[in-house]
Image 1: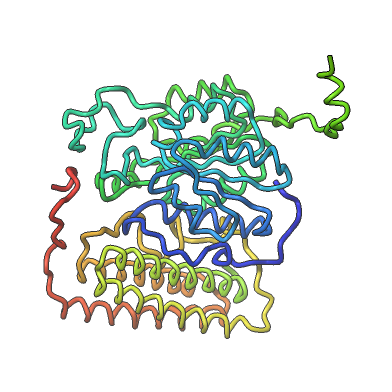
Image 2: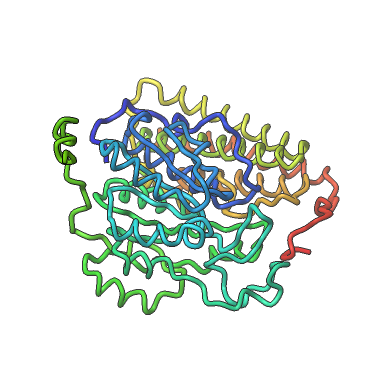
Length: 277
Length: 165
């Protein structure tokens, strides 16, 4: 995270003048608000922050902020974010998207981003549905979710467990939040940005249009990860009893993040000498 | 809550959050071509900005604490005038929008009157009661508006999601 402090800005200063086109009631509004508030709380200069996203409803989020943004291609937000962080390590890099973008199309990138452990923050707005394409089952939809016209008997396969995956693949900071609890979400995002390593936050962010039953999620979520553990094995044990609605920071590593070796590039002459016959 | 400065810090945040959220709902419903409902939310955003201006006027010259977003002492999970999570809907009609706005205004009224009831500080109590009175006026206005607004049922969607078809 960048250490330069911006003058005190209001969270609305981090908002762009682009009007969101999310549906009324979408959880992503709260995630946007939490990101803006976390950036303002940390007093990060807007020009020192980049928000990279993929494709999908939630990936529109980059356009709704006034920090640097890149609305990338489907599933490739993390490679772009990692490339940016490697090239410009002084920037605070955030990456955001949905469960389809992050766990299906970009699933492989997710695993390796966790493993690579660069200092960036990845926020996945998980609504367990492809909303932009009108409601197909996503990698986190339940096997028996039968409200999609494409899979009327349900997808029939077990949903991915994002926290499990992140933990096993080596993510350095792992948390789950709910978009209906904005204060806690804001604090977790701020902590994740400050954390020196790959921080993953799964945000349960209801899609009230294609998953109207998610309105009841506010009665299902519960604070369970009250204190993050620093032992990966202990974090895994905690997940055994996870019902998918446990909230809080599950794991925070004390291991250092990956930093590439930096040295001056060799001169052209030196390079040419290596290839001389 | 034990000081006028801390109370005003909360009032400033509450009114700004409320204005921003009402504007977001107005924008979202405009995108879905619900211009009447959008206009209603825009009006509520205007009221919240008037309240915000009043709070700013009261805060001028005082040493208002700069709280982190998670340090506000709200009774619930979010700013009390904000609509509860997930209760807006793209099929909402005027009555649904009024009911949602009413919940927000009642939340703000409960917050301000709760602060007034809990404090022994005369200056803080007076300020909190004043803010509560204004919210009560909004509650009465919305209740009256609701009685004059017919229930037209959900807005027709010719290609609804399978989950609500």
